[in-house]
Every structure is written in structure tokens, then in C-alpha cells.
Image 1 (tube, rainbow, N blue to C red):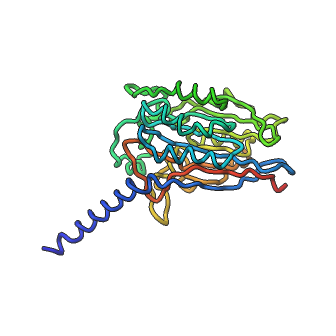
Image 2: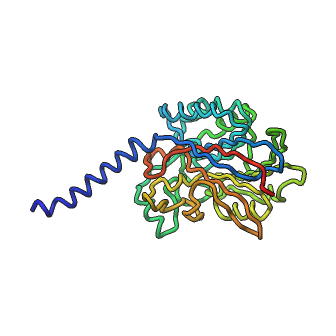
Image 3: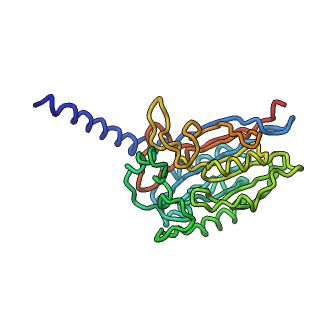
Length: 314
């Protein structure tokens, strides 16, 4: 009888240990990813870009707030916020406080679905069902991908926007904008969140301006339709978040899902994307938070990224 019970007990013990690790340690073990991207004109000095994404702030997350504030010590030339700042309708003050030191630097932002809508309780088994169904809905507002979400809790995203705008950050919600960084004229083109079909590429189409030294595409969720549009139009660099790096990954294998139609090999970090006979660099941030109802990460540490933009080789 002892042998009959030993295997399930061992499995249960391993599962409990894994849950304790992923919810108690890894989800708060914040990391900084560093990458170099050769997209600047010849002779330009490097530009340091800090990307923060998927903060999913909940009131009381003091360690996350301290870590975000500490990132100002990196002294970036630019901060790019790729959305999903909130996971609590009461989280706006904590988010603005945590990002306050970073708002002393030039910045741009787009929003994600969880900025607009409060999270709903979901079973983690939906994560695994997405492998077969293609309905990647663990972390979005309701899993439907609809632009209008009946019954969803309204997050006070307007207050978040007002705080960013007051600091001088550029709102790239289906919009374009420019900043002078390290003596370079840098152009940005942004989209609202494709995950809930708020993206309107037609409103910003046309590609990079001829007089810009660098043009960057910014979007929360890296859906292929958005990546294809940016790349085919000639943007050399596209920045996104949303995927959480897979959130629950398999050691030595990687992510199982991306929460969008991007392939799992590009779920986080720097890669390339091809469309329309052109190629762009794509950086997807694994983000530093989780939906408040699925506060676990496994083999996928929470992160921000410091990108050093350097001159092109030719």
C-alpha cells in the first residue's frame, strides 16, 4: 500500500514546492535584461532606452514599487512604457509613485487591455487549454479579444494618462510623435492594444518620415498584423510587451503560449520580423508583473530591459 501512495504523494509534493517557488520567490525576483540594437545612423552616439511593461500594479506591492523606482539609477535617455500598468482599479497612485523617478526622463507610452479594464478571476487551466484552442486568454480582460467588454470593471486609465502626460511623456495611442534624444530626431508611431482590437494602423500609416534619424514602432500586444504593418512600412525597430514571456515556462524548453498569435520562439527578448520584403528588429518585454488572480511565474523572471541603440554596421 505504501508504494501505491508514494507516487501521487511525490507528485503533489513537487507541485506544492513548485507553486511556492513560483508564487513566493520568482514572481518577485526582478531582473534587468540588457541588449544592443544596431539601428542608429553612422557616427551617432549610443542611446539608452529603458523599456518597462506589464507592471500590473496592485496596491501594496512595495517590493515592485521600490525596484521600479530604482531603475531611474540607470539614467536612460528614453523610457518606453508598453502598457498593462494596472491590475487593480485602486493601483493608479502606486503606479505613478513607482514610475515617478523615471518620469524625470523623456518617455513614450501605449496602453494595454488591463489599463482599461480590471482583471477577472480565471482558472489557470485556461492557460493550458489555449495550447489546443488558440484562445489565448489567461491575462487579458475577458479572453474574448473584443473591443467592448460587457460587465468588465472600468480601470481609471484616464488618471494614469493624465499623470504620464503631465510628466511630458508622449501618448502614442494610435498616434505619432517625436523627441530629440542624444542629438537625434527620433520618431515614434504607436498603436492602441490589438489584443482588444483597439489598434487603428490606418490612422498612423505611411511609414517613417524621411527627415527622422530613427523611427520606432510601439505597441502593447505583438500581434502579427501589427508587426507586419510596422515592418512592411519600413520601421527598423518595434517594441512590445503583453506576453509575460510565457509566464509559466518549461525549464530548458521555454514558453508554451504567447497570449497572442506570435510564435513562442519570440515570446521575449530581441529577435527579427520580416514582412513586405523588409526586416525589423523586434523586442518583446516579458514584463515585471502578472494578473492579480494568477500571481505566479515559473522559469520566466519578471524583468525590464535596458536597450542600447548603436549605429548600424552599414
